[in-house]
Image (cartoon, rainbow, N blue to C red; front, side):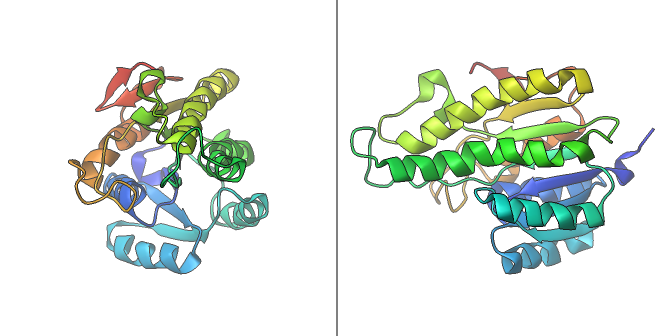
Length: 235
């Protein structure tokens, strides 16, 4: 059996906010962590802060760009021979001064491409490494804005991207169940990050808690579900 000291996790958008807090929490539990960012310099800067806690690898990766993903996977395969945890955390929230009646197709494309299709692609390209784990787990960082009863006409592309990410979570869990790979989605709540703003009630650590729990402690039989505060919620 592997122990947690041997386990390896990858966190997209791990250089700040909830992603950074997740990386920090996993390192504290003895996991080796790969953090990715669209900017290599920012990934390296974050890795330097996290280094005292354990082994951290920093990689440049833009989840909206297949070429970037493919280049990153070459590097990842040079660094590790399996992956135990994939946290799809990277995302954008670009809905400023738009609503469902005014948003452009270009903005819809951009948000869905990053927040939804990026997560799907990461699972696809890292599947060979996940298959080598005895207890592989995928966690998609979603939002209450992605719940059917949480959709807002004033946050059009973000809501639709998270609604679709929740759908992808259900489909990925189904597709990967025969391989013993579990896939879940998490609503971290409203968190004080660059995205959430200063007035948000939750710290990044509070926002990261359920994802860390799903990655490390939750039962491996829990799959295809949506979680908030370690409790299953409705899609």
